[in-house]
Length: 88
Image (cartoon, rainbow, N blue to C red; front, side, top):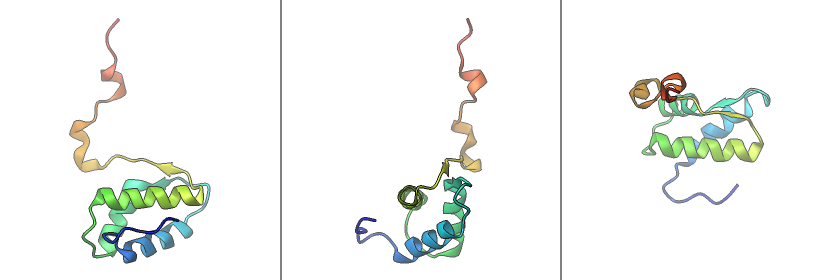
């Protein structure tokens, strides 16, 4: 893994590492849900986006599959596939 920038919280990196190491290798890592779990367990000034980026980078390094789940609070900006199609 690369050297971390100064603004990255080492406690967050350690917590992500623990959570990723405890997961089954064939089960996709739910990126958003894992970030929410870390947010509850570790006090940090990192944004959710920064935590998610760390999760993706660390899961990629381990060769783990990932699930890019959507946050449930912001579903108003999501267009369902069926309504996104143009009529013929």
